[in-house]
Image 1 (cartoon, rainbow, N blue to C red):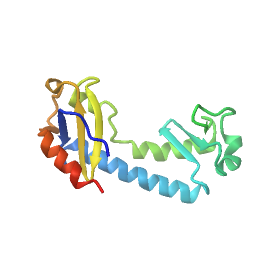
Image 2: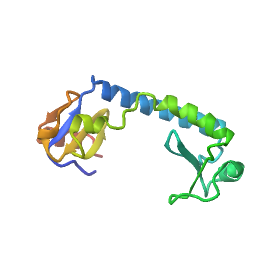
Image 3: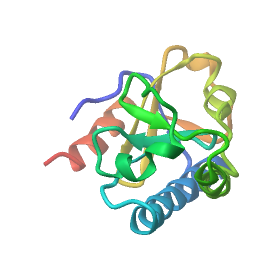
Length: 158
């Protein structure tokens, strides 16, 4: 397991950011479970965001949906659903509910613009490494002693 570089900050578990992230991950898992049991047989669904999703080209699901997909795949071999596809509206609505409380810029608001070097989940704890600790302005995180962080890492190694 790799470790983050110092300085390390931990997202407070009672913060709104942490709670929203946990809830979004729970909703994503439910979404994939529902969509793969209802619409797909080979777990072929691929998702980037609520306006850009499709089917893996090498999956058996591709044949079932190929008339609803764009002609050419993207660089990852994913065929994106056409905007006029009936499935686009169905999946987009479900995904919008999943991403409802997602603020994609929260990381920059809290840690500083382009200041985060890496993040890591260890159990239910969420850590970030930053380039410059003076740019960290959010109250949702607290600086962690690097030795204490390494102890947490050791608790989670095999």
